[in-house]
Length: 219
Image 1 (cartoon, one colour):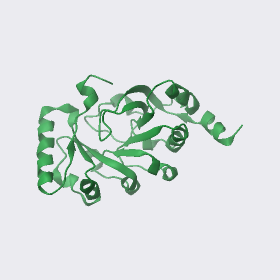
Image 2 (cartoon, rainbow, N blue to C red):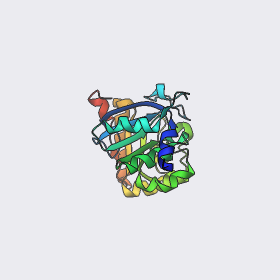
Image 3 (cartoon, rainbow, N blue to C red):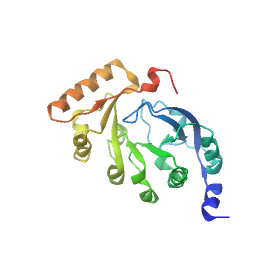
Image 4 (cartoon, rainbow, N blue to C red):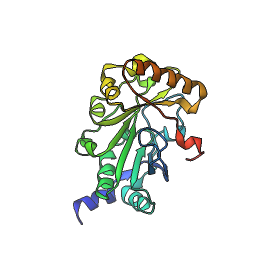
């Protein structure tokens, strides 16, 4: 048996759920996607919309069986989300397997962690980094070097100073920053639009995008 085949067979992942929908957030909004949600997160954001995926679990499924289930679905874009994908040492093997099967891969991360083995694959993946107030908006330098976009949840704590931190300026200059109103609340939409205007006056264009899947009551 080939070595790669053995690794796929033996690799176990903490799978929370697997389903088909559209990407409802960020720059790839509307993309038909398969969501591979991993169980467990290192942060505890007060407004988290996936609280059932925060705790760590001993329940594991094989990567090989997960790939079989993915192949039954139509989309060719896989979103690895959570929880927090980078708490799982198996993440590079999952990404490698998906890329070898011809899927485009997106990882949604809070940005606080990094796995050295991801170095070989990160440039081939759309990394969406969502800096969090509970982590004081810290993002690991490696994540910053590979992220394709920054997505900020506009809550009571987000402010202009956080958005304009030195390490985030390259993303502002490239126009790849998304402001996402917390839970699609009207007051947070208004705050997002106000932040957008302030940044526009300084020459930075950011996008305000709600959680589109929730607008249509999709998963």
